[in-house]
Length: 316
Ligand SMILES: NC(=O)c1ccc[n+]([C@@H]2O[C@H](COP(=O)([O-])OP(=O)(O)OC[C@H]3O[C@@H](n4cnc5c(N)ncnc54)[C@H](OP(=O)(O)O)[C@@H]3O)[C@@H](O)[C@H]2O)c1
Image (cartoon, rainbow, N blue to C red; front, top):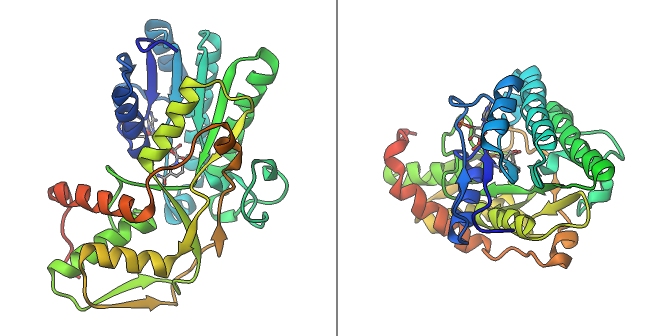
């Protein structure tokens, strides 16, 4: 892989895409390109084909997707299924037609069955039913994994899928309406601290367990896949370490300096009890996470404080 090979990062403005661009630049890659959804709507096959003919990238990293939580998946099942299918199908097919050497497809741990044994191994894919709340998104992602696997099998091209666990870090979404659990907690403890509120109310019982990976470690897994041909079609990317939501809340409370009490609203849903990934397949090849949760949350909080002007502070 030459440092001046053209690398197209689809979704370069998103949390994951931006981290991938930063890490690639840090490692000397000088020919990285991206297009916003306004400049190039990846759901439009004609536009995508034209773009590939004009730009002719050597490597494509697909970090573009319609992403959202349970509520959004529930309200817009058709868009979560169809937009994601269109985006990834157009990218995968245009890459294949235009002789792209390497394609890296990003999915998510929701591709695995709801009741699969823990930790989740790659081989559990398609062995039982999915979690119904996000099956639209998961089915689109499984189709992307299978399309890359089919191209790999039939044409011996280096098309590979990486499945990250829950990610967090710089450029995360701190909007309480739409954010994931970790940035939502950062935001709630920050708002409570500056408003001098003694209590912070969080959803659920605090007992479910979750795994978190800093987005810069995820980007380094992508760098690893750019620089090394991976022998198989599907790899999990996580830390292999999980903690309870209560432990996460206490860590974030300490980092934000909030001194009050945490109230658990058990009338709100807890979600799946545990979702831990088995990352040994990629680790055996040489990638391993480096940023532990304490360090990662501190970095994320520092980034949030520097960029707080982007967000409206909520009086709670
Ligand atoms: N965040 C997580 O915790 C997490 C965990 C596991 C897996 N992942 C995976 O990582 C990938 C990226 O996630 P993210 O968190 O970075 O999401 P994100 O911040 O919402 O970014 C998504 C990106 O996709 C682009 N996009 C969406 N629709 C598009 C369209 N029609 N045409 C062109 N571009 C379009 C957006 O471009 P514009 O900004 O220009 O509109 C945006 O840059 C996804 O595949 C997701 O499944 C994320």
